[in-house]
Image (cartoon, rainbow, N blue to C red; front, side, top):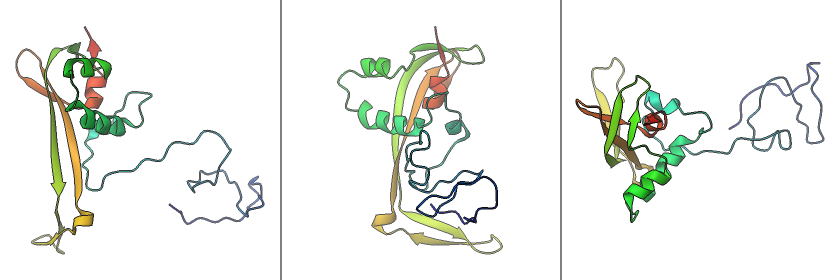
Length: 169
């Protein structure tokens, strides 16, 4: 993605390169622009229309791509010959304690699928909306993963990010 900004040297200590770009005191995200100047984060593709719950941004330190880990988990879990061993390999605790100190026990792993086949756009003023079916190439599919724990009173649904924050007992 290219951002509009001035590529002229304003005396800020920028150094000119043979390819005509200058380094400034702000970050660039041009592909290859800062090549060779430290570690780069890997590119990540996002699924359109995917809702991002607040907890999706609360990744434990060291897991910046937890959404990709979750996608791999969903793809593989249903075909695992031994689901219990798969959960152990994925470091999903069976008995754990929440950050609030409540003991929880894993009952079930749920996956679901959704396919968006249409979109709505509110009309000006919000009293009505326009509906458009999406062409096949624009339809989007997504999978959702939830862990069902029991806290002694009721079932508690958790995301992978929440499960990663649990302390094993």
